[in-house]
Amino acid sequence: MSHTPAGIRQTQKLRTRQALLDAALALLEHQSLSSLGLREVTRAAGVTPTAFYRHFEDTAALGVALVEETLGSLHGLIAAVLAETGDSEERLDRSVAVIARHVGAQPAHFRFIAREQHGGVGPVRAAIAAQLRRFAEEVACALGQEPGAAGWSEEDLLMLGGLYVDHMVITTSTLLEAGPEGEAEVVRVARRRLRLVTIGRAHWLDEAAQDGIART
Amino acid sequence: MSHTPAGIRQTQKLRTRQALLDAALALLEHQSLSSLGLREVTRAAGVTPTAFYRHFEDTAALGVALVEETLGSLHGLIAAVLAETGDSEERLDRSVAVIARHVGAQPAHFRFIAREQHGGVGPVRAAIAAQLRRFAEEVACALGQEPGAAGWSEEDLLMLGGLYVDHMVITTSTLLEAGPEGEAEVVRVARRRLRLVTIGRAHWLDEAAQDGIART
DNA sequence: CCGTTCGGAGTACGAGTGTTCACTGACTCA
DNA sequence: TGAGTCAGTGAACACTCGTACTCCGAACGG
Image (cartoon, rainbow over all chains, first blue to last red; front, side, top):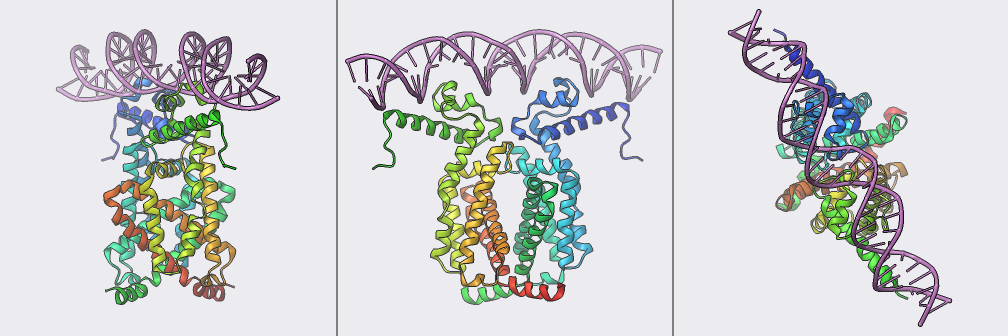
């Protein structure tokens, strides 16, 4: 009951499909998706332009597939990191380290995400936004199950999750700009930022209580 | 002693230059700079392709000019907002309101910045990064001159300034995605986020002191 | 085993691209 | 006023692009 019972036919099809994805990713290192040509991709992948249509309708569709490939496999990973360590300085370091490791391992994928998050291709933007929203929800859910989250509203948890996710994205693109030699410094600053947010989180309810008294 | 003593010649030149910039900005609403064609711009501006070279060497150079036009006039504005209000909830609201107003007034400019901040054109990325770094320094400087900043290191001030600037950028792009009808909700969440950071800021030194004891 | 399916090749088309060149004519300035 | 500057023109260059055809041949399924 293998998950890939494909015959020779489908295997080859998937192989060239992957070749197209890889070629596109390599080309996208120095340009953005909206300027990526169909022929350009097929040339780099070693197939004819017409073959492209057997796999994707558009370069936009290829972009969406790249989004899935990059972010689809990351779900659960955040929750795992948040769960395996307690609410402490250690968890913060672990989170940043995990990000740095992933970015270092496959920089092209994350550069693509950072670039197209606000890029010119609508469907790709939407796909990235959807994935990031899911991440934010996962983080919010994970944080909500901790003792420190007592008294937090659903909305505030989501706000906090979004804050963490956005900072994750910022950190990845900063890491990419800095390159391997600047990684240590970027990690240092990212940790400081996260620590500040964590401190704010710890005192959030005090302030909210004050707010309730002062405003209502 | 006018600041623009230009003759008819230079006036016309500046006029078509501005026409090129405006046309490019309009076209960039639905695509990114790396896919923007020189001819496309000149067609929209109502001039011949050759005329383009009288003003810019590249579409990349045009992009850099757009960055200056958008962000160059914003310096000092942040410092002004931070200075005119005390360290309070009011300042926070004012800051977000100023951002929302600017984005609402010239959405195309800010969409351009958000899109090209991590876009495929190197020089433009560099120009945006340089401007944002200046913003971060200005914010850090403004915060450093306040009573609440006693005991803060230069580096931490810069970290904080960068945090605020990055959130300003995130907020602008979120505003753009949400459109006018979703503005109120985005503003609400942005204020909450800023408040959380502000709370963290207020308790930063306590934590640092603990840290000093625990670590060193 | 044999007919069908289908991933991919090859060719061709029209449209659009960046860049160069010689040229024009209105503005500038001595 | 007359020579010179220069923003903008128009035609031509040698490309690349996306897409629509027809066709091939290996893998498939009954």
